[in-house]
Amino acid sequence: MSLEIERKFLVSGDFRPFVTESSRIVQGYLCSSSGKTVRIRIRGEKGFLTIKGPTLPGSCSRFEWETEIPLKDAEELIGLCDSGVIDKIRHLVKAGDHVFEVDEFYGDNRGLVVAEVELSSEDEAFERPSWLGREVTGDRRYYNSCLLSNPFCNWGEE
Image 1 (cartoon, one colour):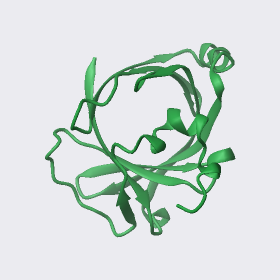
Image 2: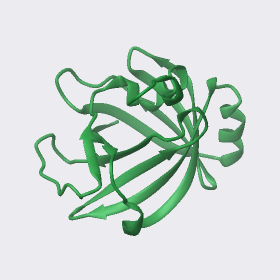
Image 3: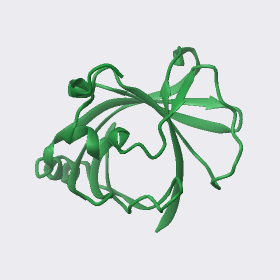
Image 4: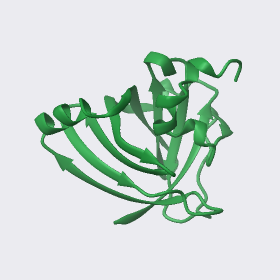
């Protein structure tokens, strides 16, 4: 199991000219409680099973374990997921020495666009591109698992 150190931001500008790769992601949750999740993800033509622990107190770190599974298994497991699925396009955008994952959501979360950057330590410096908006690291509303039970379309003015 590894430690994921990730910071999350809203996107407030045009990131599209800097995109190097994009792929559709459909994901659902077999279990999600107390910040712990068991996720099934289909990204392109690949399936993944991911287990995440809760965010460690006072940090932006959490335990994560992920393994690739056969696409057919992932498709069947998606059918067992609680509360539907998250549908999004993930764009990869290089900025300095880092690659931001910019997620553009669809369905009930249409209009929400967030960027995440993975770091090797919590105090690691990174370039902040001009399109990067307000930081929302630690705001549970922006966790994909929470977007199923309280989708962006229900938030009102954000």
